[in-house]
Amino acid sequence: MSRAILYDSTLCIGCKACEGGCAERWGLPYNDKIAAEERISAHKLTAVETHGERFSRRLCMHCAEPTCVSVCPVGALQKTSLGPVVYDAEKCMGCRYCLQACPFQVPSYEWNQRLPKMRKCDMCYERQSQGKQTACAEVCPTGATKNGERDQLLAEARQRIAEKPGQYYGKIYGVKEVGGTSVLYLSAVPFEQIGLRTSVPQEALPDLTWRVLDLTPDVVSTGSVLLGGIWWITNRRDEVAKKEGRRK
Amino acid sequence: MSLKLPKVTVWRAIFAVILLAGLYATYLRVVYGLGGATNLTDQFPWGLWIGFDVLCGVGLAAGGFTLVAIVHIFNIERYKPILRPAILTAFLGYSLVVVALLYDLGRPDRIWHPLIMWNPRSVMFEVAWCVTLYTTVLFLEFIPVVFEKFGWHKPLGWIHNVSVPLMIAGVLLSTLHQSSLGSLYLIVPEKLYPLWYSPFLPALFYISAIAVGLSMTIFESWHSSRAFGRALELSLLASMARVLAVLMSAYLWLRFLDMAHRGVFGLLLRNRTETWLFALEIALMAVPTLLLYQRKVRMSPGALYACVVMVLFGFIANRLNVAVTGMEASSGTHYVPKWTEVAVTLSIVGGGFAIFRVVAEYFPIFEAHTNQHAPEKVAEMEAAAVAVE
Image 1 (tube, rainbow over the protein chains, first blue to last red):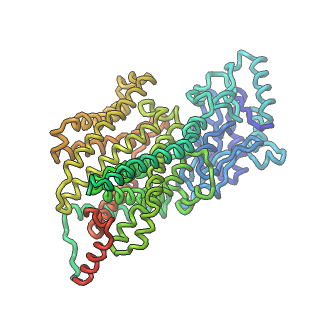
Image 2 (image 1 turned 135 degrees about the vertical axis):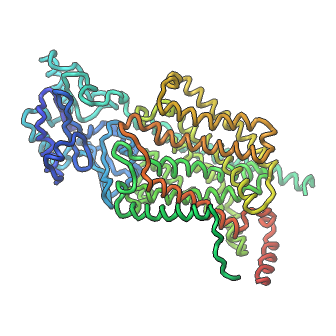
Image 3 (image 1 turned 180 degrees about the vertical axis):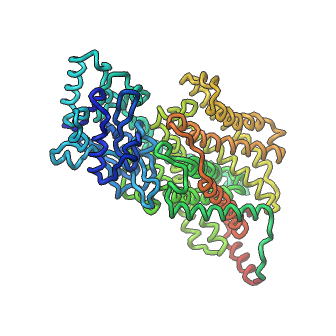
């Protein structure tokens, strides 16, 4: 089974308790100035955004087939069977391909550190593996952020839409986006109006590069035979020509 | 020999200024990190150092594998006089790409990590392995020049014994990573502007790398003939230029076919930065291609040089458009490199030119290669040289 987060924008009151809980869990500083920043960064792994009267929370989407995991050259990022996408800072060499490739622009870099790391939400992997709730879900006073099994949360989201169709935009963000994510969104309005990227493809992205990388053995085997053959023929032609005295 | 102070020329003065700026930028990079030395952000994580130093650097060094394939695998011997400069350019080019990576990586002390921590699904992993292996191959392809210079025949023989598999490996490794630099961008279909995003990026990067490798070889032959007072191998260069024209035509044809199939020509009607920079890039490639089809242009050293320089700039424009121009709109920010990024890049380029010049002056790069088959002759010459000293 796979853990997930359901964020219901219609229940969110913008109190930013999730931000505070997250900062505390990571041991990051949190004050009024940081609370005012409406963007995730290396010192703020989740952020509540204001869109007119509505709120929206940003955090790592924990994709089912994460782009960042596929692009990381050293395997520092892994999708756990529990659901969270986790990061091993000891492996990371700082190429920042994860920042470049993430379709949700989630990973942040410690640009001003001398020995920098990438930073992003890990859906409280340790807490969840001990059976605890994520820090953000635990402190949420209205139930806007809920932590649980993805299947159950998905069923609950569908039920909420079915019970109050007038209150919700009829879709759930995260079901099909880039092949499905472990963070699901409910909203009263179309998702782009609360700052979510609706231009992302509906299929998982790693296949795009894997289709080409998968050809590597073919290129190497065919190529070496072909080049070896060409070398042998042209070289042989020269040798024969020399022997027959047509050349010096 | 007496110690002479180098003559002060305009170029040397400019080079000194660039180098000093580069040194100060290096200090800033080390002490204040990427944030202090670059304008990179979470929204725009790859800038000039990846776009120019890595993407252009690797491409501009493609002459090495192209010429090795022409001379040693296809056995077209008449190109031999320009093989060594091409190998030297490639070896220097790749070494400088590694230097640039040391600036760009957040943790340069871990540059070796991909060699032991594997993720075969990552294009970057493949590029890391290919570049490491190919730089080693280039070193082995270049080192005979050093052995010849000092008359060490035994190691010369060892390398000669493995030279064919080595050269084939070099061509294959180049094919893989030159195309993979394009594959890096396959994973950002919704981020890279549609004038540049294409499922054919690997093929396009590969063909343009071969074309720019030929251009670079012509470019440096032209310069070295002036610097070292050699005769220009004009008939050779002209026949390469003809191949270049055909390759560029194939490249442009593939690009326009692909754009037609993806139906993106309508974007060209929009008055946006992307449109104008795309037009510039295509013009810099198409104009020299058309010109080079004319014999008169190919046989005129000045016109040939101008065409080749246009192709080089067209190539650089293409790579920077993919890495910077095409990624801006979706990032939500505007990226202009900091002066420190420019200073480091210029220092690396300037360093490359300077090292090439010094190596070409002291090692047998531009000599006729009769020596390779007659090591005794080298030994005689060496003995004579020692006697004179």
